[in-house]
Image 1 (tube, rainbow, N blue to C red):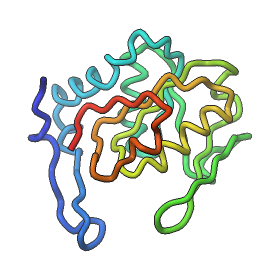
Image 2 (cartoon, helix red, strand yellow):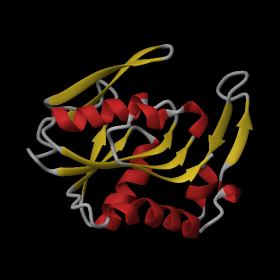
Image 3 (cartoon, rainbow, N blue to C red):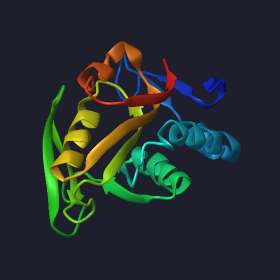
Image 4 (cartoon, rainbow, N blue to C red):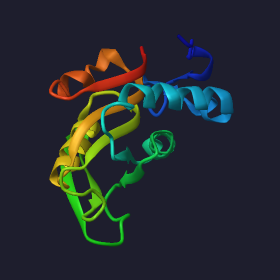
Length: 171
């Protein structure tokens, strides 16, 4: 098992006082470590019949597109509102400080397609829950959710209790 700590930098008081931000940009800067992380994200789903990978804006695009390549399947971005130019499905969701939404093009996921959802971090689980719901609104079947880093104290997995969730690192 890989010790991922050298590639996860703790940044205190970012983006605001009292928050400990986990910076994973050092991981992306190291080709070997990043490749290992992609393998670790993809491996649990190799036999899951995945046909598409959905990456959540924005860091989920980095991991998701690489996982899609590793699994030899297509990639679909789940974007914030106003970023997609054609017809789209949308799911609105609540945040601790307001609300947000995610969108996917209406033709990005075929009815019944098995979809793997990928993001960088699982925190409270709100964004992942919304993205999972959006995959289903699009007609997809959720094969699972993969994240590089899970912040266990925020209990995001609880919001995803009905889903298969795999994380590379749990802190």
